Image (cartoon, rainbow, N blue to C red; front, side, top):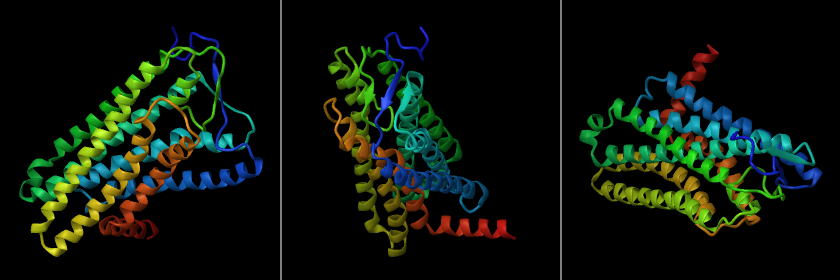
Length: 308
């Protein structure tokens, strides 16, 4: 059977989007177009700056490069279609397009989770075991962790696609969302989805909650270890860890809210998804550049070279 041809009579889904008001749609079109361009360009600026700056060769910046790359890709999965759909009253997405969106969303989200774990481990080693930092966080380990992130993302996304392909649709095809959402598909399915919903909550929600808890514990350990450091070292550590912890909270709270609950859709889901898929990738580069002097100095140096 062709993956992009469902074995039922639903070949496309109608997306209701964020609003049906034409005037609000025009305003949102301008707002989201600006957010999308800013998100992509700012994240690519971070990738370019780190790649071309010899001073940003530490493992933390190696992982930040991939985080920025994932964020630029993640916002490109849903935001362009959302922007285009705001120009039309009736918007649809094909079955194949829906599967593609779900796969890329979960692939990039799972990959970002593993990259955030790697960044937390990097900060733990740098602060708690500074004498062994260069020995532990060698280039080979950093590259291996990134490969694990990509493979983990592919495996997680494949599981979600297999779950989606197992659904049967009998007729209703209207999704009250601006993107293809797995829980919305579960509500449209005419087969019993209770067990599948529990499995998805355990697979996605359980993973988010477990990893979020582990990261909270790791930062508690890091903060407690700072008592023995000098004031200047404390400020530098708090600056880098504070930026990373903020990104972790912005990423994991919507994830836990979305998946750690019974299978159901609520009006607030669209706002949570918008924050998770559109606003968080925009905020990440702001958080990392505003609180990081080295990145800001490297950007200034790069711009000076470009101008001259």
